Amino acid sequence: MKIATFNINGINKRLANLLDWLDEAQPDVVCLQELKARQSEFPLAAIEAAGYQVVWQGQPAWNGVAILAHGSAPVVTRTALPGDAEDTQARYIEAAVQGVLIGTLYAPNGNPRPGPKFDYKLAWTRRLLDHAADLMATRLPVVLAGDFNIVPEPRDIYPSRSYDGNALVQPESRALYAEFLGQGWIDALRETHPQDEALYTFWDYKRNRWLRNAGLRLDHILLSPDPSARLAAAGVDRDVRGEEGASDHAPVWIMLD
Image 1 (cartoon, helix red, strand yellow):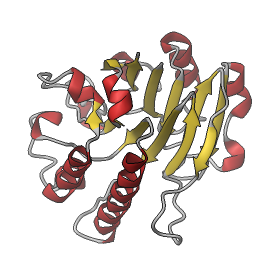
Image 2 (image 1 turned 180 degrees about the horizontal axis):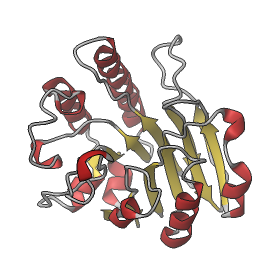
Image 3 (image 1 turned 135 degrees about the vertical axis):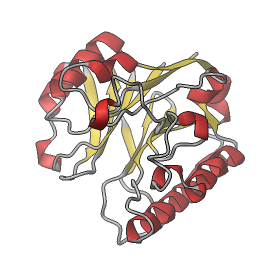
Image 4 (image 1 turned 90 degrees about the vertical axis):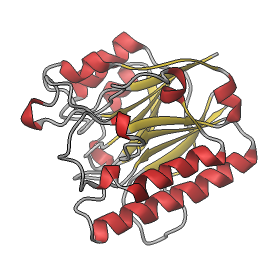
């Protein structure tokens, strides 16, 4: 079973890129973030023509998440992260696919900091941690995949001082990510590439960062004990970032036996 996560950065703008990648990579399940499309604007016909059934939460501007499944229909279990009924941002969706519970997330960026956006980032991630603990307690096979908007360690960002004040690398952000690992979640990409110092998934459009390989690792796939025991491979489809009209993120994938 091949499961991938991809911050598409505008699904309609980059639909051709997405369809090309789906055809080449052939994932069984895809978690998408940053759809930047209203619920009614999701390109359902094109996705279904590619062989995928889909559930999604659309929202214009910066949000929106989806789960695509090849050959089976995702069974929705949640369309929002619990813990704050007044939070209407479309950042989380959860569904069962082929016996695996999959949560797709687009965590807040948190900039500028300090300020309300950083406070929201920390509070939202804390809610995700609480929900992750509940999921772990079920002992079900669970995958949490998406753009966490956290660089877990200094080696997960290119050598630079330009991000020193950025919300993505702050001690508070990194401490929350470490709490997921403390709960027992396995960081699939780091588990399979423990020594890789340039394990990037995001390259900003500015300042030739793609050409300079000035990247960050923001997109993560966390596994509960059952799927982590079946983890056979993981990687980043880095070349997708270099295509014309590409998202500033590259797809991250895992293979489960």
